[in-house]
Image 1: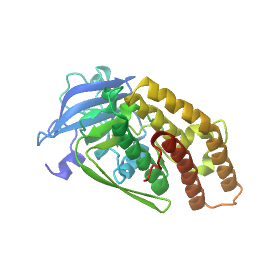
Image 2: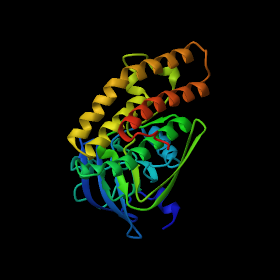
Image 3: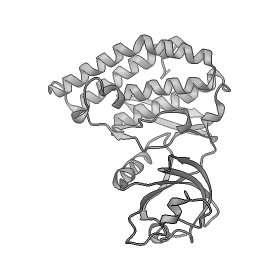
Image 4: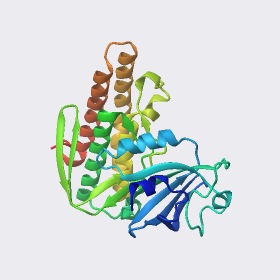
Length: 293
């Protein structure tokens, strides 16, 4: 199967066979299992949007980052109205619209990972959850430091598990981490992701919801659902005791950048340092060690 065929042929029925709808999110995002010509199963995400350039930019970026799903290709096309009206049930392919149709969709074809961590709520050990947390936290610190990427929709349904041995490498703020694991956690769903730009980020009350610390806190909270309600309560109490001061420090760093007291590179480094203080305080309480030990 040539790249030329994949990149150009519409409709897609000759090279991409839909199998079944896995999820329908408010008739805006539809996630399907599909099959390529070589019988390899893939995930196809269909988004009804004109925002192709942003989605493609994010997908091209995350393909270079650890612990992010692998996106084989992203493309835009016109869709037949009947496919949209029936939410892609019992179809033969995608992109059946002609040039005059105004029903734009974006298709993202990604690797099919085994399952979501949502299937493991209240089922995992503290030690296994510790490895999951390390991967997700290091991946977000690495992504933010090197690209400014923030996921912005952290929840357990967006954590996928790939049951293969991996050797992962992370680098941020002169910290280099090698992590070997019997499995790899993958982050998915980048519809809300942003490339962080402090020049257009509002101060309180909106800053927190567009920050690295917001994503890190959600990661801790979501991962502790994997163990038990008891452990989740402990985690939330720890976060509540540290959250306010962490955000205050981050706002001061942002003000320093606004006032041109620090440059962008220094700003990013200070944000990482602030998050590492928060992370290690929690990690010390939970595991009596620093996260990168």
